[in-house]
Image (cartoon, one colour):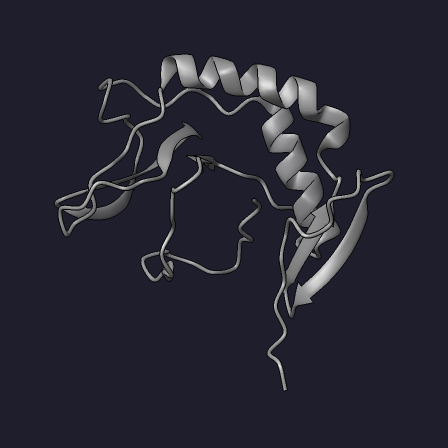
Length: 153
């Protein structure tokens, strides 16, 4: 028997209307959910990346990540030889991370609500850039202080 696999990008047809697909007990793919805000999201993303450019952080093991990362919101996710953690300060600039745009926060709130997490308010947004050849190895977010809040991606 073949194991079930899910390819988030297998549906190459343009999304005509948003639809939700449950792929796990508390996991959903909301296809087309962000399309109505895509222009505003991209405009805000450009402004964030001017203030906090993408960078290839170094893991605790000393490896440079192939994924470009940045953050916005009250906290940003960082890694270096000291470990993985959240910080209120961008280590590249020494300044606080850019504020999270309302369109990002509203979209996260609405997506979480749709997936069964009412009242969720995002305080941090990790931005990952995957270019051809970039990889994210299997990992677990064991260092999180709580698991009640959803990860909205």
